[in-house]
Amino acid sequence: MPINKKLAAGSALVAASIGAANAAVPESVTTAISGAGTDAGTIGAAVLVVLVAIVAFKWLRKAL
Image 1 (cartoon, rainbow, N blue to C red):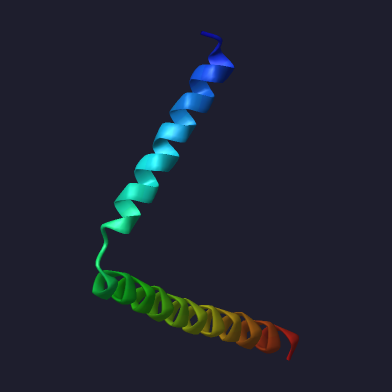
Image 2: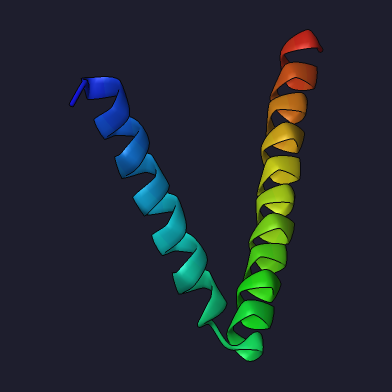
């Protein structure tokens, strides 16, 4: 069997396994994971704003 066919068969098996595993997750778990992702995005944005503010403050002090 050529390597391309083996790779395609392996990829199809992995894709099928992921679909089956995803179907068994309860709704509450999916909601909790989505909420955690939103929280992580909010915290990441806050950290980015703080870092930009620090760099801007240093830049302004250097200019004066």
